[in-house]
Image 1: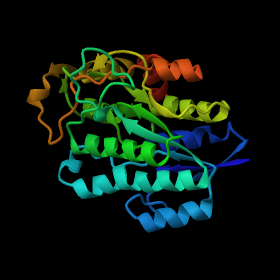
Image 2: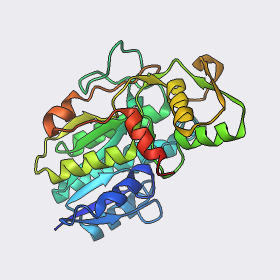
Image 3: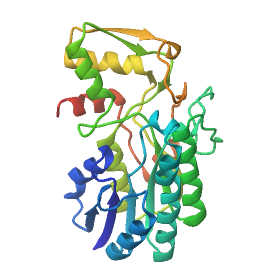
Length: 283
């Protein structure tokens, strides 16, 4: 039985992996969170990794407070970059497989078409810069790693756009939502299933992969779908990103091309609305 260490197990993705773990009796899952596997404390990472001695690591942990990171640069870099350097070194030394989750924020959003794994990253935020640095450290220290970039993650667990919209739509008569940032949401349960499918497949093709649900929408479209599915009367108005300035710059276009993960692992990607309906039925 292969032991799998899951970091960030109380986050959206980690929580969804927990939900699916029972379907994989051939794996022995060890779920850790910030209290017992803090990514900002190198000595603790080394000690606990050695104690657990995993055959596989799924790193779901990250510093994800995108706007706060603009001021909290050192901590964001420690968690998203240096901790990944340590973790990837440990995996390489122990001959353990590493699946590391990254983000569409490594791109600047200027592409006219969906980003492939071969497109050159150019992050515009501290969060994006630190996540890209983590990717590079991961591949340098443990070239056999798999990195999965994803985008617009939501789940029944934790805080996310869907839950925020539902709360605001129940509190207000109208909402303004950005309509000129384009991408695709990712239901964390779908991504969790993809990761476990890869690990269970017996195929290990290292490198970078892209995964989100299917579709091409704006945040305004996403909010409108949430309103429709929930049957709420709140009026949703589209606004430009310039009307809602944030400390961190978001990519205006961050659609991810998923051809590679489909080809290599035979992954079938659900439409974003199909997954959104599924998630909202659980709330």
